[in-house]
Image (cartoon, rainbow, N blue to C red; front, side):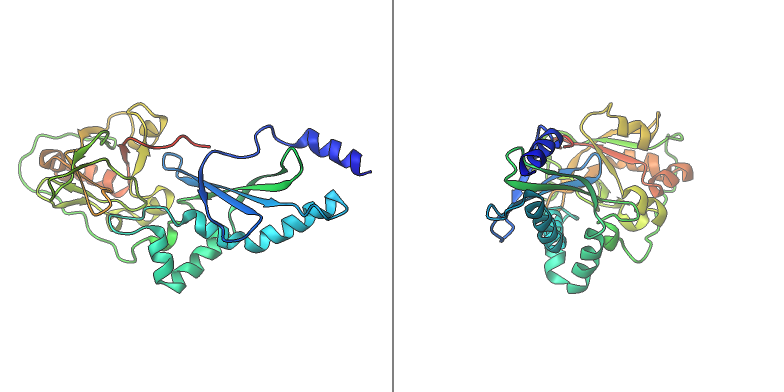
Length: 292
């Protein structure tokens, strides 16, 4: 009977038992945890592996025991997986989890609702592997507890400026850029709640300026690897205002500085202000890993 079960499971086992990603210490023997942060797709892919007890007589029983044990540890593992995420110019997700037990509890509630995308045994039947997806945004998004409680108005710019109606904003922030306020250069670091500034260090867009429904749907900005990624048209439309980033800003280099003239083109026309409030912004930057 055991041989028949082994044969059946071998046919069902995936060819690839683990996704490439960053290994995270679990603190528990017999477990391993990896995560891949997909900034373009807006999600964290998590893989948890739990060794089976070789002393258990039945493989079916060993698998069931491993599933039960893993489920008990899952909320903690998923919190560990999101901990490395950059929230804004000064915080990692882990900073907020450590500082506020109430925030940690809210994140834990979201984590236990994570979508399980795959469950299987390794080809040698030594361990159980489960995969999960934690979206950034949406009704179960891990960014939801981070959203500001108060709205911040977008300040229009008065005066004459040559502009037109655009469908969104596309910022090319690839390569090393000046780090505003310093003599260094840095590459942009994607984050959950970035800000956009002009060269006079006036805020053009920040999380509180985005309509709450749009913020919950897809955040302040989207990220892309190239100027022709599909996400560009989906989010910024066919005729976006295209700007080259002038600098990055913030302790963690998460914020983008655009030209003052570009900011004026956006803030001088109500239709373009509305696009900012809808979060129709895409930033192209380097170093974004491919989705798992």
